[in-house]
Amino acid sequence: MNIFGGFSTKKLKPHLKMAVSRLQIASNKKSAIMKQQMREIAVMLSEDPPKEEKAKIRAEALIREDNAVEAYEILQLECELLAERIKLIESMKECPPDLLSCVATVMWATDRCDIPEFEVIRKQFRSKYGKEFEEKALNNVGGCLNERVVSKLSVQPPAGYLVQTYLEKIC
Image (cartoon, rainbow, N blue to C red; front, side):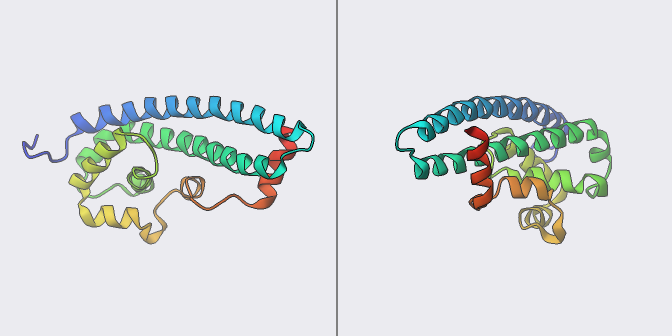
């Protein structure tokens, strides 16, 4: 092990496992919040007169939460895969091609998810594969990121038809 904080599987694997647990907790918390938001939206739409604009804004927030939960589930699977393949990661100098998307996506998601373990994981992969690899991952050079995670964690507002579909589902 490097005393200057280089790559260490003894540090990476536990953080990957803790990230899986933290993602599960965050996902459960967001799901509970979503149920409460759905009840609040239903109340808004049942009032006389209905508060449709306010309900649409709340539905957008609900869609964002739903997307985050989906992204967390994918990230959970990717962290589990990386933890299982830790020996392969350790033995190869370059990132294994079949794990490239997982590694890049977890590094990219660090700034978009409130999962503290991701910061350590990102630093470990930076130590292993270098700053250039990190830059490519953060900028999605070559389309290396998991597109579903990217779209689910996007800051773009949800499409109008999707908001309308959610509102109809709630009523």
